[in-house]
Length: 307
Image 1 (tube, rainbow, N blue to C red):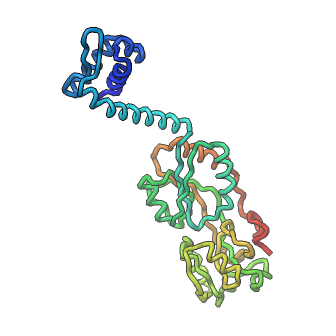
Image 2 (cartoon, helix red, strand yellow):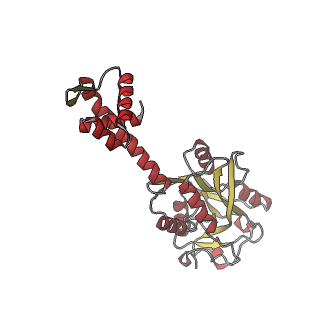
Image 3 (cartoon, rainbow, N blue to C red):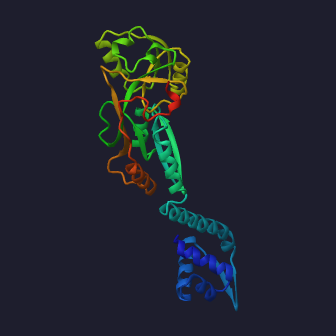
């Protein structure tokens, strides 16, 4: 059934007058009549009875009226939502965030983006790199902010945003806190708190092994906030990306002899057409100037995190 023909039927059922119904629809009376006749043919029976100067619905017409009203209303709703989406109102952006990525670099950006595009409903999904890649390929995410030491899937496109070093995090009372930097061999015998979702775990482990440093593992957790809290409480130390620190009381120190860094990227699916909201977000992201890591480990993080 054609939506225009259903619209003709609704106008005629409202006015019970084909000429006035045609005027409401902006067509000629013969055009409206032919449309209704075509609809009657598809439904298998007459929808109106015209007796003398009056017109009324048949039993079939009364039966299909509420259903056709519902179909037309739903169609109008879909068109309205599509129009709003194209104007970036009532549209959504599904963004994946790697679980070990700290919020400090993107929080202000997302705040500005929301102010500039209040009609876009932003949803954030926290997951591991493997899971984010899977959700991107399945179409469950529009884009992801993530890190992956190995090559990305051939269908994924990674646009570098900034690099961040891995530093050693400790409590203010730890001996490391009194030094400007440490060597990888200084990690030998240290009580270590493992971040299970650290994607550079193997890389860091190879540097430790190269100098014969052995860690004493005290705790493992998928929760970045828990590990940071335990480090600040003096339970042990951990390697931590420099912009991931959110726990007050942490002291961060660079590793002087084996600097390890990761490249944070915007990842999208190659060849997939971007939605309007995603295009606006990428535009805002590209305008953002992310500062490069500096020699002073206190840069780019809240001062409260350092002593």
